[in-house]
Amino acid sequence: MSRGKAILSILAGVVLLAPFTGWSRGPEPEPLRPAATAFTVEIGRQSALDTYLSPVRYGGLSLALGYERLRATSFAPGQWLTRHAVTGTFASMTNTSGNGSMLSGYLDYSFAMLRRWQVCKGLWLAGGGEASLTLGGLYNLRNSNNPGSAKAAVDLGVTAMASYHFRIKRLPVTLRYQGSLPVIGAFFSPEFGQSYYEMFYIGNRDGMVHLGAWHNRVDLRNYISVDLHLGTRALRLGYRQVMRTTHLYHIDTQVFTHAFVLGISGEIFRSVRPARRIVSVYH
Amino acid sequence: MIQKFSKIAILFSVLSMLLFQSCHKVEVFEDDPYGNFDALWTILDERYCFFEYKSLDWGQIRDKYRKKLTANMTSEELFDVCDAMLMELKDGHVNLSAAHNTSRYWEWLYGSPENYQERIVDEYYLDFDYRYTSGIKYKILPQNVGYMYYGSFSSTIGEGNLDQILAYLATSTGLIIDVRSNGGGSLSNVETLVSRFINEETRVGYISHKTGPGHQEFSELYPIKYTPSPRIRYQKPVVVLANRGTFSAANNFVSVMKALPNVVVMGDYTGGGSGLPFSSELPNGWSIRFSASPIYDADGRHTEFGVAPTEGFKMDMDLEQASEGIDTILERAISYIAGL
Image 1 (spheres, rainbow over the protein chains, first blue to last red):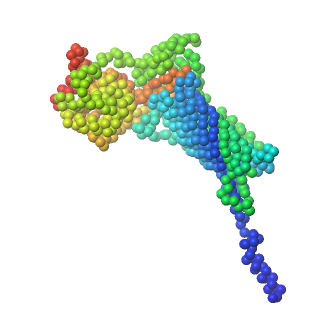
Image 2: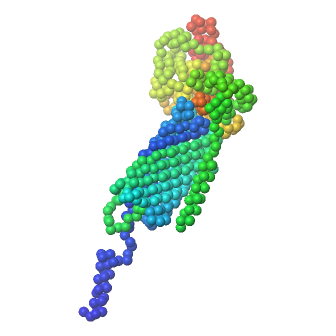
Image 3: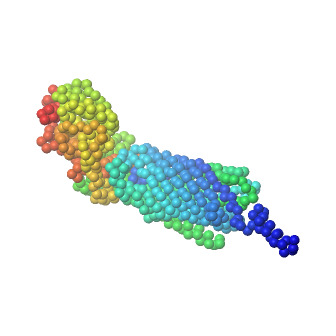
């Protein structure tokens, strides 16, 4: 074999074998994107004022169950992440004189997509957009033809998140804050003195759905959590504050919830391929 | 980079503060005699629906009764002042409920003949022997006239029960629907019953509601339409018996039936009560019920003060004959149907 033929043979071998030896300069293997999930129980206090039902503010115990799922996106996983969150909240309240009762129930779902930046080691900031759906209502147990005030809304808004991952001695800890602020959407409201009998029995449904923006509807959600990583799972402790307000047709609704959060969180790996790069939303 | 994020954080904080401020301030009343009185007056001022129709100067009424308040008055004394103020509304749907008492306006009832004695009907016409379901007593009287007494629209009428009643009464030559002293209840029962006496979609009235706190702020009248029941429907002449105790949903029933062909309303004016009542409350926990949403008859007229009997059929019960067990209103209804 001539020297030239020998070189050509070696080059051909390199090209053919490259895919199997990892020497190829082809696309980088897709990194693992574990989903950071959390199941939470929330207990706290809710106060509610809905002038369609009563001019008196009610207050009482609030209980909620929550589920949250964060995951890096398949595209640009180091920069973007998505968040799904579902919370079901129930509260039983009384008026200040103690002779009136009101129940409230809310189901909130939101989907957010956030761009994140690493500020320094362990500290991430993120911001993005959020779409949310709210269903629920308030029910006053002693009212006659205005016993309930139904709540339904779809919103687009902004959300921000900051997380800091550090260690206390050998215990990994993730401190996280997230805030959500709906900006524009649509929501349901009766007119000032309109009965649900007129709307849903007689059928006068004109004008029930309204454009919602900050002039007539302001919601705000703040959530602070601490994840204490104990092996593959973490204990979550936190605080959630939810503010729901509307002002339309001279009807004011103000529902505030402050709750202590207790839960279990952790990252779920769908497959284990240690050779791959892992893009965590925690760190 | 950190500076950039600091600016964003400051902007977000300022924005949050602005949003908190944008929460509309709701007037809060103190839990004292003046605060509770003012709360009651304001609730009605903004939400009561008959100020214009009744030509009431609510501001003047406030001044008249607020003078009677003192800072140290007892809860019962405050209740009496509030009760007296509410009587000015002349509305049976207005009730203030406290732990010790419930205010009520029943002058329209007490100032009129009763025109119904249950015992006379049960003993001398039904012979204590009648069928009873869904809160309805019914029987075919000896003159082959069907009779049903419905004492409260709070008693839910089952469609199957109504089928049984109308099937049983089908052989009668006409039907008397007695709603005397029926104090009302659910409007859905009105539709259930009326839908058995119409053969096509029928506009039976209108509803309106307040669109703001002003005394004249109302929505356009919205038609209330009933569709005929697909089940058994009664096609023969009907007489509806009413008295001043026929109130609220029963008043609505009479106004609807009166507009139907083949129906005669007999007896006295109904008691009225055409405002759909809402509830609210005072800082001290007292509950207030009031007319909030007016319901009109098929011609768009208020029936707040009652529905007149069909022309020529206004009558009061003869008490002398009543003492002998004769209900002269029912007698006339029987004769009317039997003579057709």
